Amino acid sequence: MPRHFRAIAVQPKWHPHDFISAAAFRAWMRSQLDMARPYLAADRPNLVVLTELNGLPLVLRGGAWAIPLKKFERVATALFISRLARTLPILRREGVSPVRALQLADADRNTRLYLHTCRDLAREYGVYLCCGSAPTPRYQLVQGQPRRMAGTLTNQAVILDPRGALVGATDKVHLTPDEEQEGVDLTPGHLDEMRVFPTPVGDLGVAISLDAFRADVIGRLEKQGCTVLLQPDANGAPWTAKEGLPPDPTNIRDQPEAWLESSWTATTQGKSIRYAINPMVVGNLLDLTFDGQSAITGRAEDAPEQRSYALTTPRPGFLALTPWVETGTPEQLRRAGTQRAAHSGHPLENNYRTDTLWADLTLPDTTLTTPERNRHEEALEYILSRQGRPKPGLTAAVILAGLSTLAYLTWRSLRRR
Image 1 (spheres, rainbow, N blue to C red):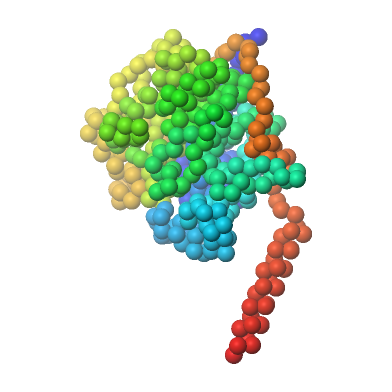
Image 2: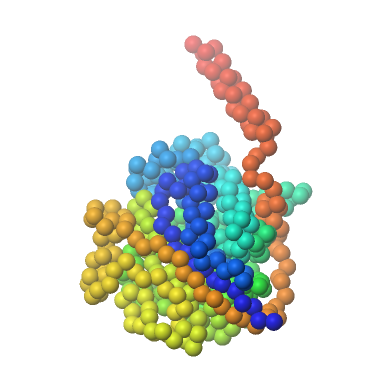
């Protein structure tokens, strides 16, 4: 039987204060499902797709005091020093950089918060939920308990079903320079681990941001029969700026022109991929600028209306597209992008458009089989099956140990006087 379903892409605007506490993060994630709520279909399954790296700023959790430092590098340095008791052992034991050690120091509790928040929202709203992506360690079950694999921290997307159960997880393979060692220092995923997940809302393949531009990723997903491509995105630059990324950094062009090489190309010129959902986050996060136009794309015959991204010529293939914040000549658009960028000082700084896109889609019944869980997904299932708060006894034990250590150090200090 045909699969009829609704795809929804949410374009939110983030702010550092959305991540300073568990309550703030839950509220921010809920606000995105609330943006989707008016468009949820009552007569068919719903697929809601959120944006890339919406869990990255959880490194700010408990660090509101550092936000006035304004620059991400300064904030990260201050947080690393303030958390030295947790970051230094990881730095020395696992041989990672300070920025990765900072993220790994709280990775277990932030991963639980992220997964449990998404699980609860998928259940409450009754949707298939691509949670976006977050820096996530690789886990495996050791004696029945999830254990973090030393040193690893991937840009990972997780898909949940309406019961909050795991559909599958995918790591980003091709990292941007900002995600590599000189930036937030993430671990690249492995191409041979990418799989397609058959569901009532399509045979889902995930290509996080830059992965959707790469022929090896798209080719692998198509070979496995992907019909719906999910492209969570966080474009870390003004939308109307120029860009040039590996493997050919000399190929400088407008960012919207480059974006046509991802989801739009996959659906209009590809093989098995019929639809693609590409949500993009906007907003200035400290000194980092994020901007873009979210889109749902399909075959040219599915979307004959002529439209396209800013700075590009209209064309078929866009089932839904968020308008950019302004229209005008290329010079006017580039100026508008610069005015909104972080620390521009212009009255329009951080004035971006939020949006929710939707499209009703139809596919034939799947012929694919569900792929086997890998060891990491087995550990994620365990985390999802547990409640989000630590056992009281464990917390008390940690507090008691800390007080005992403090008392001992105080006693030694007094003896030396």
